[in-house]
Length: 191
Image 1 (cartoon, rainbow, N blue to C red):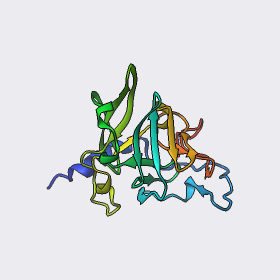
Image 2 (cartoon, one colour; image 1 turned 180 degrees about the vertical axis):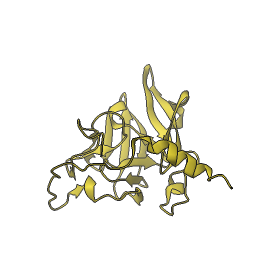
Image 3 (cartoon, one colour; image 1 turned 30 degrees about the vertical axis):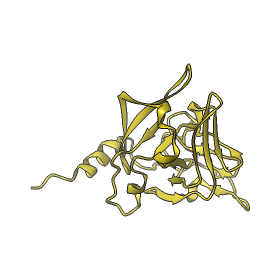
Image 4 (tube, rainbow, N blue to C red; image 1 turned 180 degrees about the horizontal axis):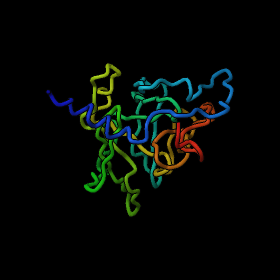
């Protein structure tokens, strides 16, 4: 009997909490120009972002792109990715004591973000070698940087300032046009 591929073993390990057991009782209505996290697919999809993306810490722009991608998944706020050429990597330091596994994208590695005397621990992460066996395009984000909106001073999508996804665990960026409820709020453990 042949062992399952590494990507399947990691997916199995990441699914310890299971899939969606419950949906929220009410889902926010969506109006013109809005989108619901409950309309995002599972497995997640990689999409181009038609807006400029920016991240600032201590008054310094550490990432700025017109060529960003986002990963959108059911119940979560989208996570925005910057190509490495549009990130000031001199501000990033790889973290040796932390990594996480996404059942869809694989192993993520973290980076501290330091500007001057200010350090934001594990503010950014990358997928150096994401799974690309589901045909969802995860290979497109290999080596690209994502930033936690709650671990930087400012995160921008076009002219809209994003706030962190609730709960602090996920790296999604929330804007007023995003409707939920969004995973991370109290009581969402089963979503």
